[in-house]
Image 1: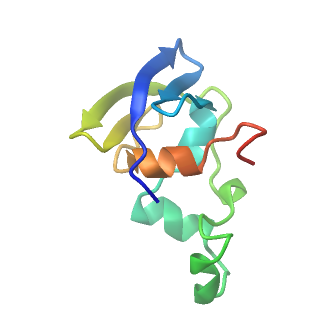
Image 2: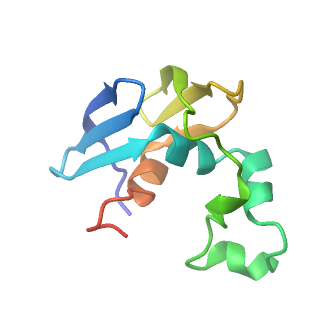
Length: 115
């Protein structure tokens, strides 16, 4: 897959994030959704509890997001670009170790076209 690059990244107040991709696709993510999908090792392990290791490489590779308990009012208190390839969030629960590559963000787009 070709590296996905955003055209614009915009905070949607305290609710979420919008990314317009260079190919014209628009993705809107709620902050609780992004927090549940955190790609760090700790959160990935929690999402994959009880799964066969082989399932990590199949369509269910992201694991079960419902395994991460996230309050509905979760917010990003800070976000920073990481080079030209990712965003790192600091969440209202203090978690900040996940680095969300643009490829990951495009891959978890929750819009009806992508899901």
